[in-house]
View 1: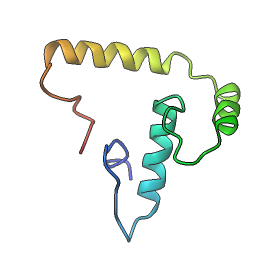
View 2: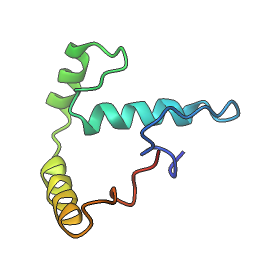
View 3: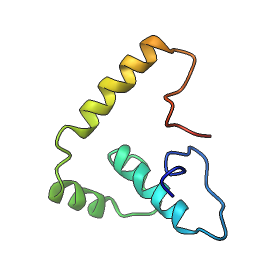
View 4: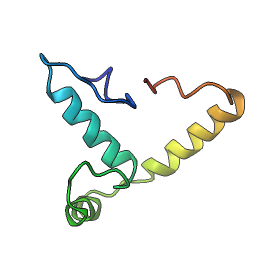
Length: 81
């Protein structure tokens, strides 16, 4: 689950169904609710209100920006297709 949760495409592991659930949850969090996978907008907002991100997204944006400047044709190493 840990190695696959940054995949862009759907994970189809019959033996490990939680991988896909975790992947979707991580994408909802990372996208600040842009991707919801059927989760109500009000619930996403409630979670955001109750769990501050403590500059997580700001720090990720900085790191991705630095990576992109050095490696413009390569995605960040944690991203998987």
